[in-house]
Image (cartoon, rainbow, N blue to C red; front, side, top):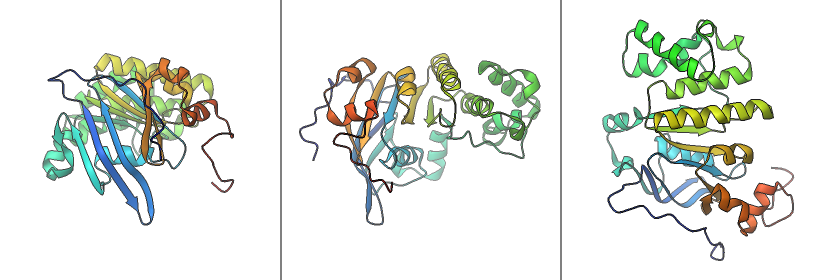
Length: 271
């Protein structure tokens, strides 16, 4: 269907450099709905890649397949060259310890204090002592612009922007090699969105982490991406740098970044 849509110049990975994340021919179906229809994607170590696309195009499903929350019907997913789809639960846990996640809406635990939320992976995954975990949590809160007095507050006491900051602090608390960002600016005003984008860029660079973000927010994509990929009808139909996306003639990408109702992407009023 998209044979006429050309990708931008593809960056080749030098011999001996294994992609941090590689998806090859990944398919996922729910009932009669084909959500992923052969996703091919490579993310280099230390790269920040953003997947854009409208609602229901398969962005979240792609993320969940990489995380192991969903099992693809077909295809290959490798992290550091290891096939994660055929791993034992113990091996998969080893991989997941390398991953941090900022969930849409932050997804904080209401019954836990802010510092306990930030230190969740340290306390539960690494069995760290509370005193040491709290110290790291306060350090990570400082990295996202929150003072120590916030540590003993609860999520109900926080604004939307503060919750996102706490969620980001939790995502980086274990110094992960890979960080996933699920719609990181949803529900925030433009100024706070830009603050969160700046914090994401700063934290990812400081860790030297590989980042994968899914979003429909083009301002966010432009700010945090090294490369942007567009997912449409379960396929990556375009991939390139931020500079390249501004110049692309791909009609699907042009319509999406312009936010236009006119173009090849047709959305029903019922959607």
